[in-house]
Image (tube, rainbow, N blue to C red; front, side, top):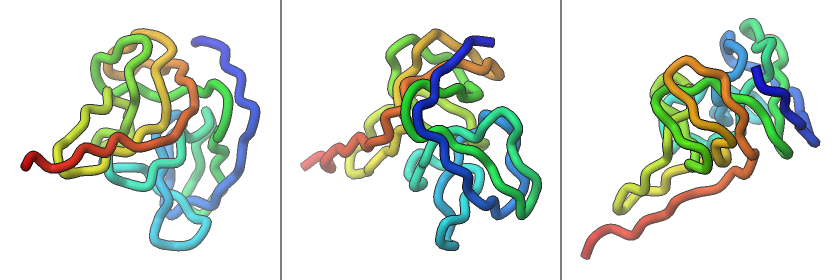
Length: 130
């Protein structure tokens, strides 16, 4: 595994169990997170290495360089979003949609890898074709 340098970590209550390194999103309940399942979810970042049991607390790095589980081939520098299983995949703009990102890959990665990423949440907003 690669070492990483988080500079701001926050603990959140989880709606259900979350495995380590999966991407988390804000749930419908205030200050509670869940595993992300879409690039349009309100993504916060990746769960810490320990994850969390249902009802427990999970650490999420919010600034610096964190680590995330990869869900497909990504290249160093790719913007990262969530697939349907909370794994990081390359974010691709979608016309008429807002795709949320957690940051940028700091190494190449393949499905199942744990890879470092520069934490930089944001959106890729693309107007609908007209």
